[in-house]
Image 1 (spheres, rainbow, N blue to C red):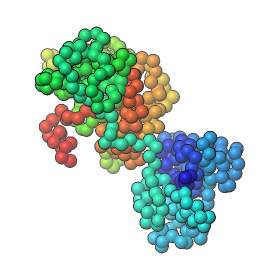
Image 2: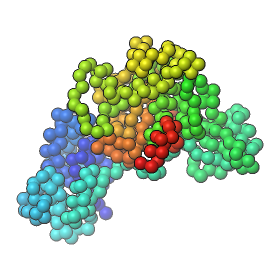
Image 3: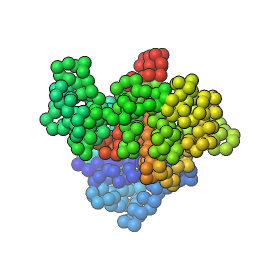
Image 4: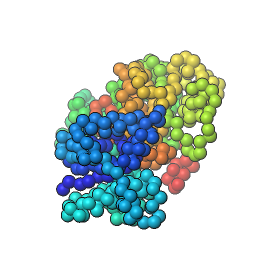
Length: 460
């Protein structure tokens, strides 16, 4: 049964390709949406780019006919039509919704289409698609079906964790340690293993006897972790199983994209910076450590910041500075590995300045990353849960030859009003790259920042 979908402006600004994602169904674009798209097209940020892309898509469809009469939309048989809001339909809205706002006009268009379908005796439902929660509530109140745009949503409860447990015999556990590893054929698995997935092997006879391994998708075998147990990163060492899996991925040059998801205090950013600094300063695998994060504040904005780009980025990079200070601080005995490469502890700003002065560290504003090509760098994108799928795509496609990119974030701490735990770019990327041989993912579960931080993350 072919449906009719009425699209809100925020759907098109969130995903310009939404026009092509409704298969063989009919799409109605209220003229109010076209007006709002026009108002956004001069915005220099992502919304402006998306608005301009939507305008180009609609203009290209004009070649197939008059948009007011409806034109074919894609090869699957759907149609697209731009419609006006009729004054008589607006007058039939409840008194509280007759203000003539954009949302009310969109509601009126959907109601008019629903009335026409009833007159014609058609059964296909009319569905209003919007990411605006209040508009969905108002649609329910006037008798319309309303849905969120779910094309790029990920069920956060089913998010791929990046690790699992497998019960084996002692003889099988011994075989893991010998080349070429233990073939997974014949093992009892709850779900098929993904490439680079961490596996905790448990001895059936002695459950306290365990071994950490990683699944090699190319050979379909389990192999022991090679890098994490041998890593010397100064004051940093993995404190739990998930951190061990994450560090093993971070130190493997063949894994070019890594996503680390977890609540506050689980060590996502600290592990990424420690591994990056070690491979840049000690092993010279990469030319520099490139750090970036979205400039979205927790509370009310404090206004424009003075100074050049580095000075403006200073407040946003303070969490990174804190982590570097922890990595490079302490006595000479504590400052082995990456810390020794950067010199003695002289305060967080000195460490930050020294690393930049030696060319080992670079700070990049996400706003200016479009068009760049970034080769031979260890790139950390912190707080990636505040990015949209389109922004994440833009960042990952900047990666050049020999670059490793790590995205970290907590889907439950989102400050961007236009995404949520299931529609942000980080969780979207986890699901899209699941099972790819160049990618790895770990969901960190246990907080290690402090006892209080762990208690707060769980209780609050």
